[in-house]
Length: 154
Image 1 (cartoon, rainbow, N blue to C red):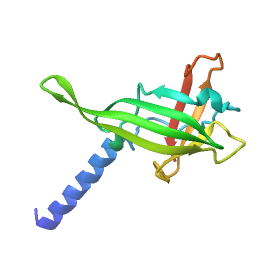
Image 2: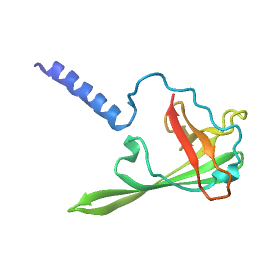
Image 3: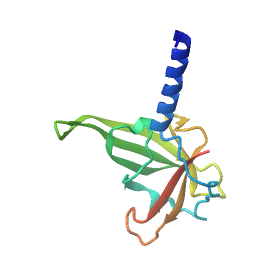
Image 4: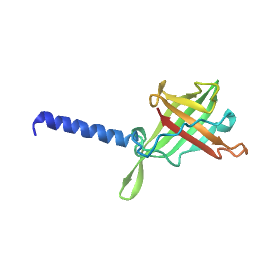
């Protein structure tokens, strides 16, 4: 194999590996459903601290544990602060390397769909065309109880 072919092969492997680590490829049968958010969204119910318990792998969250998102009122938008802890296993023990924080804003691009929003960190959307949709948020006054949220990359 000449050096040009080897370089092309290595480049292809890097692209495939990076895409799979970043969680961009989700393979399943059929077409994605047309998902819409709930008809209304009381911002006060959504504000507060939320704890992550499951996620698709993403390159910007590699080795982060105990992720927490704090949502606050910020005019018509919602402020977003994501915190996580970078930990590694060292001789069977989790060792904290650093704490990670990202600040952003969630905005509703279409007022007719208040439960569908886009989050931008540092003024740039996290993924081009990404949106988060609140499917169900119980109104039983329990703090942060019963959220069904999904993020789609379009």
